[in-house]
Amino acid sequence: QDKITELTAFRQNVWCLMNLCRGKLRPDLNKIKPALPSLNDLLTSSDNECLADACWALMFITNGHSSGIK
Image 1: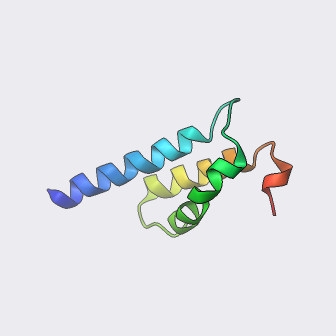
Image 2 (image 1 turned 45 degrees about the horizontal axis):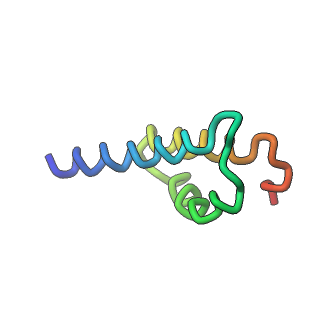
Image 3 (image 1 turned 120 degrees about the horizontal axis):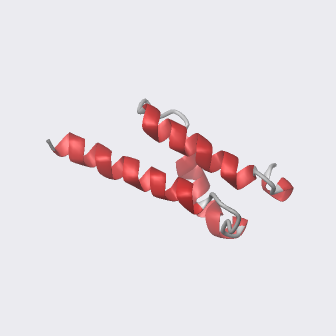
């Protein structure tokens, strides 16, 4: 039961981070930078839901921000 609760909380956190990066009013890149190492780590997640949300978050961050792609 605890592992299910942990995974659910983890998924909700990744989903929240992804949604913070989407939409027309995205946060400033400097405010997102602290989350980039975590998003990078999520790219190797074995949980498909977390992996998908991490990929979406990175796409939203880089979409329309040529200065954010290095």
